[in-house]
Structure formats: C-alpha cells, structure tokens
Image 1 (cartoon, protein in one colour):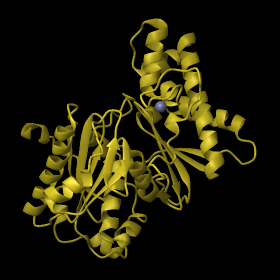
Image 2 (cartoon, rainbow, N blue to C red; image 1 turned 90 degrees about the vertical axis):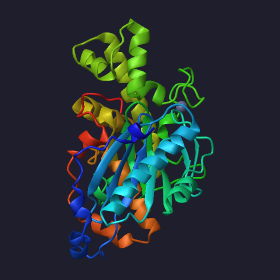
Image 3 (tube, helix red, strand yellow; image 1 turned 60 degrees about the vertical axis):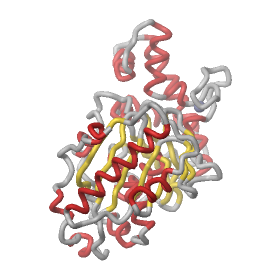
Image 4 (cartoon, rainbow, N blue to C red; image 1 turned 120 degrees about the vertical axis):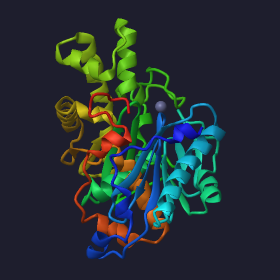
Length: 365
Ligand SMILES: [Zn+2]
C-alpha cells in the first residue's frame, strides 16, 4: 500500500510558503491561519494538497483510488491525509483540519458516504475515520458541491449569488449554488440533474433509473453509444471530431447529448431562476461545439427569462480541492480566511497537470 501513496508531484507551491504565517491573508484582512488538508476522492484517483490561508496548494498529491473494497478505500483516504499531515508537521506548520470531497451519495451533515457508483462506500463514516486516525476535525462534502463551492469562492461563480455548476466528464455531475453556497437537500442530491430522466424508453443507468441525462450526455455515454451504433470503439472526443467532419451517427449522438443537457438545464434554471451556468469537467474542453449549441438549445427552451450565461469553469481539477479546503476552514470558524479568498486572483490552471487533468485531450476525468 505504501507505494501507492507516493504520488506527490512538483506542481504545487514549495513547502517554504507554509512557514511564517500568511502575510497575504493578513494584508487582505484575514488573520494568518494554518494550512488545511484537502482531498478530492474520485473514481480513478485521490487528489490531495495542503491548502494555505492564501488558497495556495502545496504538496499536491495524487494516488490511485482502490477499486477493491470499502476498507481499502477508507485506508487509502486516511493514508493520503496522514501523509500530508506528517509533511506539514515536519515543516513546523501543522494542518488544523481536513476537508474531503467525495464522489457518490454523501450525507454532509453526518459526514457519511452513503453509496457510490464507482466507489465502494457502504454508509461509511469517513469523517469519523479521519478524525479518529489523525486527531483533526474532518468535514465531508459531495464532490460536485465541493467543486461548485470552489468556483463560487475563487472561480467562475465568484460574485454570482446563485448559479448552476455542471461537470461533464465520465459522468454528469451538478450542483446548485444559492446565496453563494451549494445546497444539499433532504438526501444530499439537490441539483443533481445527471439523473433526470430525458427518455423514458432510454438505456438503463448506473443509478437504477432509465434514460437519465447521464446515459445520453456524458463522455462515457457518447463513446458507448457510438460503439453500439457503429462497432467503432472511440473516445468521446473522437466522436465529436467525427461529428465535426460530417459523420451522421456522430452528429446525431452529439445532438442528442446537447438536447438532453439543455432539457435538464432548462428545468433546473426554471427552479432556481439563476442567470449563470458554470460548465466544467473534461468535456468542457470541447469549447464552442458544446457552448454554442447548448446556448442555442437553451434559448429554444427558456421563454420567460433571459437564458443563463454559460461560462467555462475556471479552476479545473483544483475546484474540488479548494471547495473541500473552504469547508475545513469553515469548520475552524475561519470565515475570515474564506472571505479573503474572494479577493484573490484565480489560481493558475497549471495545477491541472499535478491534479490529473488532461489538458483537454481526454474528456473522461
Ligand atoms: Zn441515472
């Protein structure tokens, strides 16, 4: 196991920035604060970093997510957090709290990971296990909400009171931000439009439903449907390239994907009445073919209000880590630090390399 946790990369800030407090935060009106440990547990990797009081990411790490069973998964998360805690302590700047963003159905109030499509959660008391293992307060968030929180504070949602955050990758993740905060709902599923049914006669979805947005509009769905229709195993981005060259099957599948997204987004916009949708995830790299077509499909579906602005997410793969860090700071009652982040320039996208993004070459992230 130990070797798995040795995935530290060099793109984060050097450890030296952890020493001597945080003069920038002090300048912006926040008291200097200790770093927090922030993790983002996804289906393929666990990303982690120490996040300073000036929203810098130090000791960026990425290790594979164990796919075997729940104990191995929990152990990997605890070990990733412990490795960061030990490095911070060795520098004389011990971390004060842990924030964890995790994929799946997450009960944020209880700190429990209920279940996951790709992760073996089984009503897992992940926050409790981290607190027991490291002796630090731990806060658990659902990953789409964590990313929305990051974008709300430091990214494309900054300054918007309410917006929808959509993450298009292997799956379709989403969250709704109201008054600057992602809402959770009764079951931790508020704003989860990926599992809205858009075709009652459609394919079975991993959630148990049928014809969900995710079965039509995710990168995995595009690739799977193209394979079923043509026998050609292509990645989703290659399907779009074929669509651009006039391939009829690819064009039809892409059009179905945009239509499903627009239908679900229009419903969500009708509920929230927001004027911004922030679009992230690997598929956002498609650029104009995604944004222009989605915009025109939304115009066709929204009559009473102006259609929302569609904006690309600004933080890339750092959004979830930064959102998790904000939750950890909130647990420490350091709202002053979070408020100071709102005045900072957006972090450089260069972090994506260390956090596992693909520079737009691959959509399944
Ligand atoms: Zn579904």
